Length: 201
Image 1 (cartoon, helix red, strand yellow):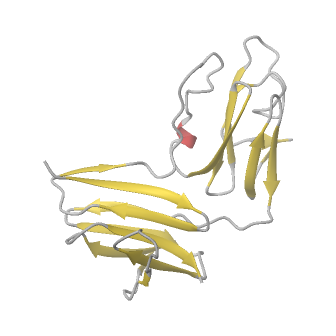
Image 2 (tube, helix red, strand yellow; image 1 turned 180 degrees about the vertical axis):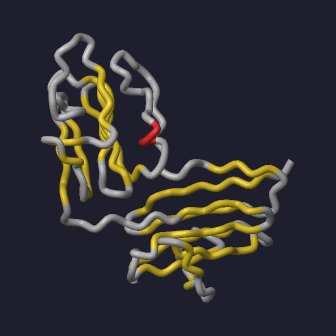
Image 3 (tube, helix red, strand yellow; image 1 turned 135 degrees about the vertical axis):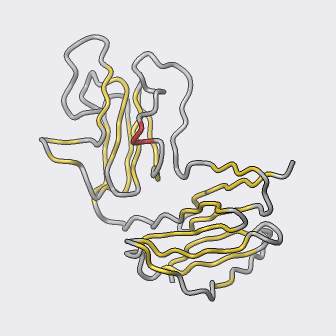
């Protein structure tokens, strides 16, 4: 049985998408979702809803996990004995907590571009490097609908049929429609596999 499978991968500074055409059944991976397994004594492998999409980076400390969202906010969950999840230590034992999003001194931590975690501490880089736009894809019958934020100025949609070096990327000649705050482009899925990316021009 033929299947359609979408795979998203981050290759800094490019966002890649691969699509196989002509499907009878569509199976799509949720873009940028966190999957976790293993010891769950503090809930560190129970992924919160907010970290099930839109995640661009993850970090783990001792029995806790931190996820950076594509909107610049941070989600954290697991052991909070030192306040590494919520910014305020949990006073009960065990010490599980979820911060979605993380707030420090009552303010949502925002404009974060990088995260790191240690045994009982979490650090975030605020500002500095602009976030990469997220290229999203959704099957619609025999078509593939691509979308990305309209505030992603200076990025061009490109595609190629093969990732074997040297790769030749071609700029899209189609003009995307603007729907809400998204550029949207519909492509037919006939033919072979095709890879897509947004590239900073």
